[in-house]
Length: 116
Image 1: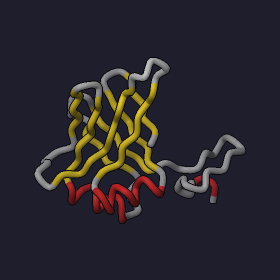
Image 2: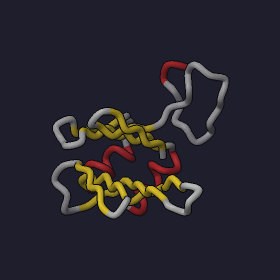
Image 3: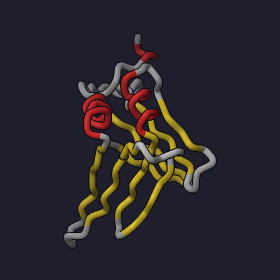
């Protein structure tokens, strides 16, 4: 899962395996480890009790939480993204497409519609 933080917004990009894991388990997590042993954890979670996508930061961990039905629909459809532009911070969650401008091939990335 790729995390981008810019201004007051968070963007997560998930590959096919991560999208499938979100659909199956309701959670995808990763962490950034530092040489000192410290880590910054981040996750995308679905919750039946969640009404709107939102982010929570606590004890060095960032959790992005989305409604379970919305996450399930997104994971099993052709929809590219989910967003909450009025959340604080704003949230954008996207399926990660294969890169169109590099000679890299990521077998876990979604096929890029611009390359067909």
